[in-house]
Image (tube, rainbow, N blue to C red; front, side, top):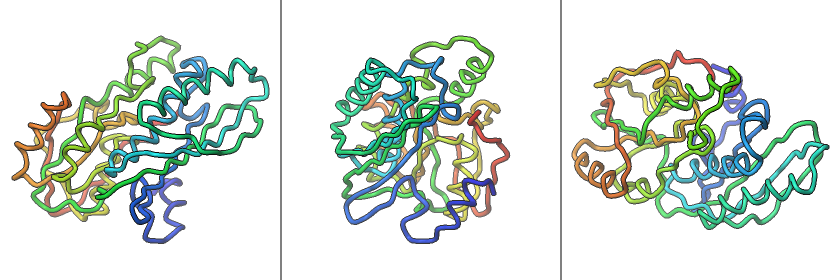
Length: 272
């Protein structure tokens, strides 16, 4: 067990274990986006940093079939930040929030040495989708493509440039597909720590293993911060899932079937 999982395990209540906490018809979630851990300022503009910090939080709401409504911002602003820097950061928050109809309703700021962003998101749902719910025989799938974020991170760490359209810069969320397909989905989470690591979470909470029908490269299996959707569904709904993927122009990759057993990831962490 890594230190993050261990620390979370110290708190034991019914709200823990998913991408957000379900309280009545609300999903409340929080994510940190920290300089030196999730990004370096020489890699991304302040506007891009703000946009991504919102999107990684929206991703948690989406995979729980919740629509974000309000956000609270907690920001550590570097002491050398100018007013122009603050305005650029705000423009990114405004852009991302406007795309998802999110209203920023408050928060807090302090001065520090690095830029750290903490976002609490309050979302609405009528039918939350959780990590628990997968049954033996269910198909497993993920949206889009995986592996390129790990490749791009390696380039950045070597001092190379990456395409501005890289998912490392701006995640490509598949919310339109998921909201339409949610009635057929038995469990889900976003691929934030890598397909392998997130599969181990689904394995643990659902007490299942997996029969794979696809061979993965290390980049595909271990690449974190992809923010694609990993989900399961009844095999009888395969055509409905594929049709909704086509309708929303979302690639759907069915790669395994849930079985009796367990699965443990051997991939290392993805933050640098």
